[in-house]
Amino acid sequence: MTVINSLALAGLALPAAFLSASHLKTRRLARRAETLVPPVGQLQMIPGGSIHYVEMGPREAPPLVLIHGLSGQLQHFTYALAELLAPDFRVIILDRPGCGYSTLNQDHLATLSEQARMIQSFLDLRSVDQPILCGHSLGGAIALAMALNAPQKIRGLALLAPLTHPVADAGSFRGLIIHSPFMRRLIAQTVAIPAAQRTAAEVLQQIFAPSACPEDFLIQAGGALGLRPKSFVAASADATLASAGIGEQSPRYASELKTPGAILFGSQDAVLDAKTNGNAMEQYGLHCETEPNQGHMLPITAPARCNQFIRDTVDSRC
Image (cartoon, rainbow, N blue to C red; front, top):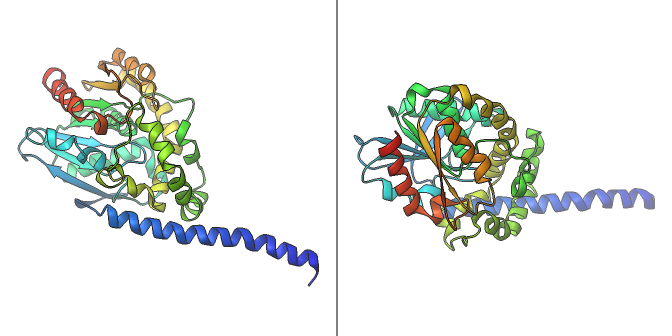
């Protein structure tokens, strides 16, 4: 064997060894994540996948559906907010398709309209009639899609820091934009999860600012579930398809958005601009309120304020 061939083989072996080691570490992190945060609810099969969900409160009470955002899971709401609402609402908290312990059969179903369809199918199967939808961040965009696509089925909207219009810069989520499903899975099974573990503290600081990320976020708010290949694939599909989806959805508000409701933003939200995604919706009938000294993660950092906002919205606007 020539020296050149030996060097070539060595050059191939190094990245292969690195990817193999990354894959093994990914598997360890994923197993640990699911041990720390096991499923807590029930599973409902729907066309295109399944929905993992938790119900709280009286079944005969007005239904309130909580829909989490990008890279999230239902524990973002069970962390503190859901129990405040449960005495007076039939609270249904779900993992969006592909997220948490829900499943999504194909990546292309991660579009806003398809997730809206799947969640509506879930609600129909569970006999949830005329719910109030409370969507946070990307969950707000999906709640809006549900209101646009089936307005007769939705009573109202109480949105927390929602995505409502196209965003010029993906910011902290730029690395999730991957258009190839194959590459999405290859990266998920090798380098994505170890990299996410290394950068988690910095990313969480940006998302929670100006508040601190709670010390128990990884377990009590389910954050550890983000350290799984499945979670990276779901978040990547969400982030990649959301840009086009919100661009197609936002022009429909003027003529098609008839569902009443309101929006709450933190005044120091570093993820989504409150004027573009909140105040701009007032012309379509959604009143926007701003909470001082709060950032993007309102369900976790300001549960009492979110509780009051949702109740006020239901009482006065829905």
